[in-house]
Image (cartoon, rainbow, N blue to C red):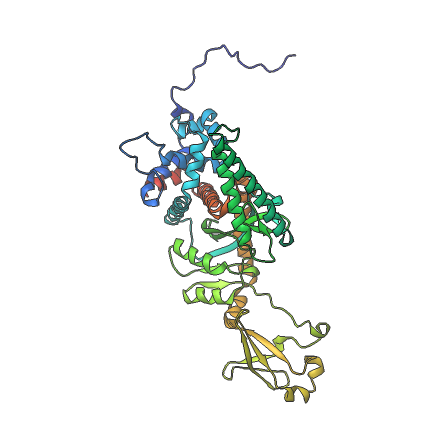
Length: 466
């Protein structure tokens, strides 16, 4: 018995007459084309949104936006790979009307339109809201780390800073010598002067970044805006705000902060701009416990649900009375100790946003509870300046709210990292480049969620009626 045989390459075939016959009526490419066609690219700020009357015609930014959206939906982010898809992928041929832009043109579009791409993603979120995919009642906020382009070898330890600066100065001196030798030989040199100048400019940028580094901290030599991640090299902190109804990402940002403690207010306000109503609930994990920012959101009508981790009194081996045993008296602005004595305001720690209350030495020395209370001459208790806000958001962080957070915000990160990015690593350098990639990725993710919720046909009708 022989093998399964295909047709002869010389056999004539009747292929469809047009590319349009190869793309089904509910194909994702038709949805992408319909969405891109509704956008006012000039109003969104895309470059070359209006072609000039003279000169070589540019590629339409609609085509390049559709190409990138298709690419991120199919885990194709490289400009060179997108160029190859234009040459061999029938779906991309239909989407771009057989255009084959080179990889430099494709990459330049992404590099120059970061802010416009974020606004285009916001426009799609508004479309989802009008289609009933955004409930606007509960929003879950979370952050995760994506690796930067920079290699872990580019991380400079504090004790290596002087040595690295010296090595950079030596390399810069070599490049300057090459330029001088090229000038003396009237340009007859093996080195390309333009490439040498570009390399010299990059070294100067690295030198300036190293000199401006915070003393005692590690810095990434080739990408100074990146933060050093624990066990993962250099990277960035990606923040998202996800609506609980259909897990649509309504807001996102990229920063270079190692933690999430300073991100609560920014994400809550960004979500407020995207949601149909200004009042809603924000739920996040304990890393976002920030009393000052929670109070600012509360003043705007946004309810915050965040658990607060409290430090315990570990003095005396942890056997001494915890601060929870002391009751705050707001009328007298003092704490009442278990023995009934008062602890009055002693000082304000502006850096820690805390107020220290102290008992009198006379009360503590005569107190029978002193051996169980403190080993010092008197007991001190600290209170956060926004203690009421911290207590409120902790009380509102019920098990049901935290379960909603896990079910809402964890899945989008898995989709972004492994279904869209393929692996959580950026291709573009710097904060601006990372933000551009996340804008494209979140737009592709929301596109996929909307198609799953409505279906391609219904989504296409919603896009055309917008």
